Structures are given as structure tokens and as C-alpha cells.
Length: 221
Length: 221
DNA sequence: CCGTCGTCGAATGTCGACATTAGACACATG
DNA sequence: CATGTGTCTAATGTCGACATTCGACGACGG
Image 1 (tube, rainbow over the protein chains, first blue to last red):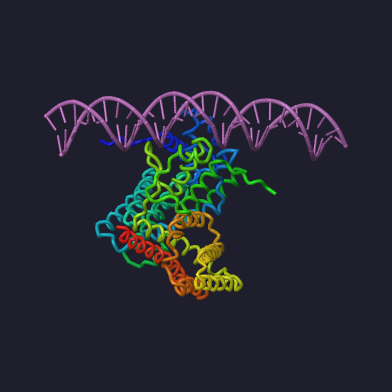
Image 2 (image 1 turned 120 degrees about the vertical axis):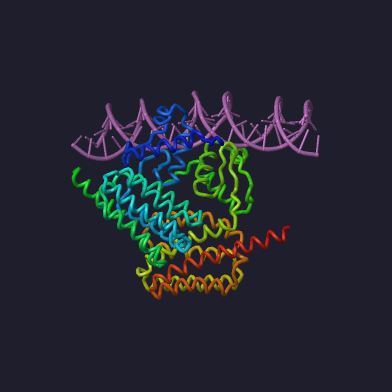
């Protein structure tokens, strides 16, 4: 039983990330060091360190002498980020595509089935969880750690966005079909096609989120 | 005339990066906060913040309670990083490939000529500078900021490695030929080929660096 | 009324001290 | 000799105070 070291800085990062996922913070909101320090009962130093790390990860915007803010992602930034994730994951899946065993492909198929079923049952959280499992499993076969690191960072960033919107993006049959297409392309062992399908998978999600946000901002005004 | 804000943290990052480029630090070396603070005449707090950022950028390894170390990059990590850069830049160049003007292509050709000439003249620093200009120009036409951010981070990381080894990697004619191949593929407007050529460009460099390091470690023993 | 300047308060950047942890080394024991 | 324990020192993690900066607001002058 190994005790996992957890500095205050790490705990602050977790806490802020949970706040992001829980929609407790809105784009443009300011993260005040002293307020966070008060809430968490610690001094500002680990708060500052955590914010520096979140800044480098792209999860917050930092302005020297002014402060830290939740990014306002423009439609273009959303598309750019999803596109980049598609490029990375497309390559990861393509480069590993000939190494998938029959059992692994079957597992991917089962995950797609489960995702579709959960979507039809209206089990929203389950769909997200299974979807995450599907993508993790998909890239786990790639052995390029650098690429997976960046993909994971983008995942962390985009998950905040997706978590907020996903329920409005796809019908149950669409969810099933678009993930099935990835598995089908792997089975077909067509490398160009694999990259295309995975890239398109993400660009589609990015585009839909942008569309949903545009709709929401219209109705708010 | 805008005064560019520069916190101590930013200055520390620059300083450490220069140390990396100047080969003043070796893989495995420890970066002590108190020593750096003493050398730079400031307190440890901005040092710590800088180190957190460098850690997130992948330029140093951080172990809680123990300290910060210069990474020892395994051959696999080197290849992984170069491969990832190739994937990102390959996509960037491919996606922008139909937007290059004739003047821009001519400029790329001239940069390749200049690089070859500098290599033949033994102007080593110039080769690196022109090479950097070539790649910057190549990706500048892409408008995906997220992707360019990651590419730039990898560039920062890999530049430390390349700066140390590049003089031993290629003959002058090879330098010219391998960059020319990129320009030629763009002119041919073959998108698949463009991605392939750019990816291969980086994998080749990564492989050569690994080979040179293997040779060096043999001769050292 | 508008623009400029000064003041003030809040927030950030940094400082140096204290608390905690890890590793090195010496010593004791089997 | 190998292993375990205790001690000490150096380095990291955090604290709270001080210095600096920025933005908001009010007063004043044209």
C-alpha cells in the first residue's frame, strides 16, 4: 500500500477542475488567489503554483499583475482544439491499428453497444463514462507517450466543454453510429481512412458545440 | 511603445532555458531552488513558479518533496517527441497547403537554397537559424492556434536536443534535399504525401539523434 | 458634460521565516 | 557483513507579511 503524495498544489488543481466540471465557473470569471486560499484554508503560495500549472495546461488565462481568468473560448478556438485532438488521436489509433487483437476489437464493439443502449435509456452520465472508456481504450494501444500526453491534456480541457453540452449534441443512434465507424475503419485496416474517421469524429463534435453555443447565446439575448 | 511586463518568474524561465541551450545542465542534473535563488538574487517563490511552468511544459521533471531534475530522455521518448511534432506539423502544412502563394513557395525555395549554401560554407549557426525560419514560415500559414501552440512547445523542448547534436546529423546536400522534399510535396498539392514527408522529416531527425547519442555513450564508456 | 488626475482599496508578486520531508551517514545488532 | 535504526542536514512546501500594481471612483477643471 503506497501512500500517494499529494501536495496542496495538487489538491488545488483537482478542486479547481471539479469547479470547472460542476459549472460553478463561467467563461470570463476571475479566480482570486486570496478567495480560493480562504475557501480552502491554506496560504496563497500553493494556490499560485496550481494556477501556474493550470495556465500552462491551457485551462485558465493568466494576465501578469491582473489575475487569472476562465478562458472565453471563441468558436474558432473550440474547433482548433477539437481538430488538434482529432489529429493526435487519429494518428494514435492509426499507428496502433494493426496491433488490435480480436478480443480488443470485440471489446470496442461492446462498448459501442453499451453506449448506444445507455443513450437510449437516457442514462446520460453512463454515456459519457462509457465514451471516455472507449476513447481511452482506443488510444491505450498506441505507445507514443508524448502524443498521449498532449491528447490527454486536450481531453482535460475539452471535457469541461463537452461535459456541459454533450447531452444536446447527438441522438442515441448517432452516438452509436459514429463510434461504430471508428471500430469499422480499424477492422478494415485502412490507415488513411482510420485517421480520417477519427479526425472527423472530433471536428463534428467541435462544430456541434459551436452551433449549440450560438443557439444558446441567441436565446439568452 | 508598450512596456512588456516581465515578472521574475518569466525571467527565471528564460534564464533556465538559456542554461539548457548553453549545455550548462546535463540530463539528470538537479535544479535547486535555493541555489538558483541565490544566483539570481531573488527569493525562492518566483523560482518555484517558474519551475512549475517548466515542468508542465515538459522541460523538467518534478518529484514532490524531492526536487526538479533535467529529464533523461530515453531513445523512445526522443522518437515519440519527434514523431508527435511531425504529426502536428504535417497536419499544419497539409491543411494550409492549398493556400500558399507562388511568392511564398519561392521564398521557401530560397530558404532551402540558403540553408544548403550555409551548410556548405560551414556556417553552422546560420543553418539552424534559417532552418528555424523555414519551419516557422511553413506552419505560419496554418491557422490552428491550438495545434501551433503544441508544436511550438515541442519545438522548445526538442530544440535543446537538436541544438546539441544537429551539426553531426546531416551532410550539406542532405540538409538541402530533405527540406526541398517538403516544398516539392506542397507544390505537388498531394495532401497525403505532404503529411508523410513532414512526418518522415522529423522521425529521421529523431532517429539520427538517437543514433548519435548511442555512439557517444559507447565512446564515453 | 467630458476628460484628466489623484486617491484608495483590492489583488498580485515577492520576500524571508518556519514546518516538513527525504536522503546520507554513522552506529548498533545479529 | 548485512540490515535496521537514529540523527542530522539540506532541500522542498507552506505560511503570512510586505511591496507593487491595477482598476474603480470621485473630484476638479475646461
